Length: 322
Image (cartoon, rainbow, N blue to C red; front, side):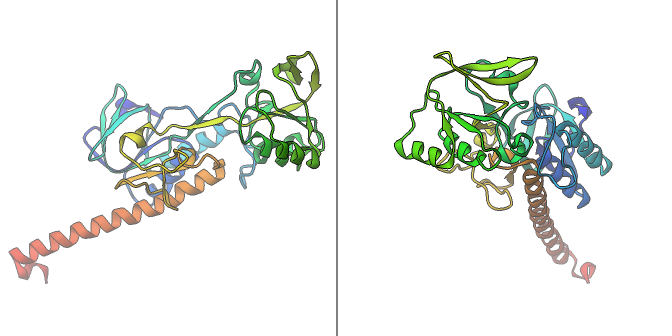
């Protein structure tokens, strides 16, 4: 990717894509193939960077996230998309996109695909093992730890459902309530599903020879585990969308329609910045859907402008437009 100084200052892009993950790059690819002028600005902070492999992506099964992005950048660059390494500071009305320490990009439309960040519980070992044997998504990693001793940390309201779901992959699932009090109904559901409950506060993750060995409780007991799941607090990187005035739902997430259109004219949002459940393949598909809609939106504007010019020419000289 080029640096910010390599951008075409003063040019008007059809679309500025903020965020160069699967959603942003796939949107850029489709838009470029529609012969639109597109630039992608990416800060280089993909959510799945700690993961060694992706799963559930047809034809890309087991591929590393970094390799996918490398291939994606080459593909979009081949269609003339400009790639800028940098961070967008803010966007002024009229879609003047200000880069940190760089130029201002002018756009007709903006697509924000800046993803989210995972806030992890402050338990020793959690951050160090994140993306390795401290995991989040059962659909992403459940198969790889199938039939192994699995734990679930009760640090989030969604952790109980996570434990119930993981029983699909392993017959040995232990739920650690930690500091979250279990309701009677939750305890009953876990036990009925065959999930063992290890009451007590989690002290740390036990790691030996760079491998997770278990979970130690404050009371001193160590529960052997080869993988542990945690439900992080997912925080969208949506400051740009907030500044633009995009509406939010009752959960606090920016609202979009089926193709990623926000409440603000000309602003789209796709991928994890708008949908915390989107896998890589889902985000890529959402990027493509948004690109279709964006191009149609731009075509409508192009046609309206052409009609105005046609009418003006006809008024000035009727013979010129016959």
